[in-house]
Length: 287
Length: 247
Picture 1 (tube, rainbow over the protein chains, first blue to last red):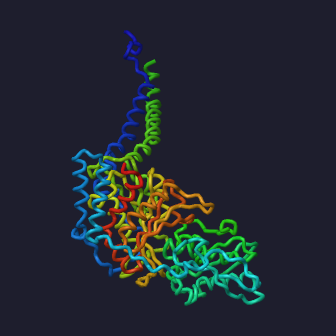
Picture 2: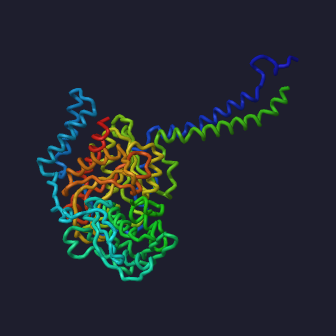
Picture 3: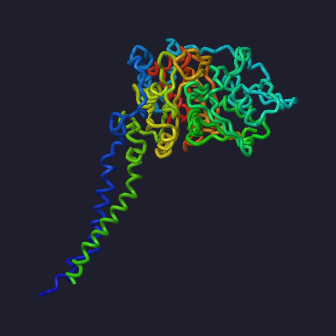
């Protein structure tokens, strides 16, 4: 009886089976996603079966008007596609065709007044004021409270110092509390009229606590401030924070400032769109 | 000999299957990512982004990926005149700008992802997507958050990253400038270019980023224009095309 297991091409090789099984597994497991994602996503633009937009289960206002597409509002829209098609038919590269289409649509909108003439608010009178950092006051009880001139420049360069007087003999915490209450209270009527940041004043009761230790100043605000804070946009949050820093770093004892809401610094930094990490301002970083 | 080989076979086949499985799992995410799978982005429970592949609109892919991040404030919805809600309107703006009525980013050949999560998740998803340009879409307010329509400012504000030491993102600035020019020219107020070192979506994205405050929602002409987004969202595509040189 010949030993068939030794016959060429007939001997059973376990490692060949292993390689074959491996290749088969790789193909099945690895290639299936490619098959299913051969089109990058379903044609309706959704990437999955979950809800698309609403992150939070916050109640939606019931009085929102329904938004409906009104093609008559886009009298120049067809022109875009027509211009692009014609340019491509005439041999233009698609990018060049799109450029022509954009220019044509913009000109059409301008002519038909779909594009409004930009309304310029009268320049804030405060732009004519001397803005920027003020040298320290000679009087030891005199301090400055900084307010931004509108949203002209959301940095120290767009601030103006307004002199105030502190009561003598205050502790660092008391001085800081007073300064923050002035900041939240906003500029006076005269300054508002000149264009300095003028959201509705926030009452000093929103200051929950002020602690100072080893140079670090921690200001905790009450949760209710999230609904009334004058930082409802990127423009004004950056300006207000610049004002806060310039004002509080006048106190020589303060080296860092951290703001929180309800004891959570993250809650404050999220309110002003700075991110989920705590915002700690340092004297060095603010100059 | 044959018996011995047969006895070894199951173990080696299992080893082979395991090897193939490991190799497939190692390679699969790269393949899936290339083809736009959303499976690795489900960390935000039940929330999926929208993806728009230009091929589905009859357009050739131009090689650029754009991530649109409409306002989803950590601290809750923000409101303006007449019941306006920024978080809802800017989602509609993003969808229209991504794949609206034919003159949007997808129809221009861009592969677009519209983030559906909070800013930190959107940044993570943007960075994983291989985004070439990231645009945060917001509307502005000059008064306290609320339904009052007493805004004291108007116009588009377009932000780019500028560090506290003065370094500016060149591509971020160029993109923001195009948004100011193109979107700003369509809005009722006078536009402006701004910088920030702190806005989360400008400082943490891998791709050059711009942060668009399209108009003021607490100023009546601005709010009216914002909700009429079908007439102006195409300008976001125009700005991107201008910035990238009509690829």
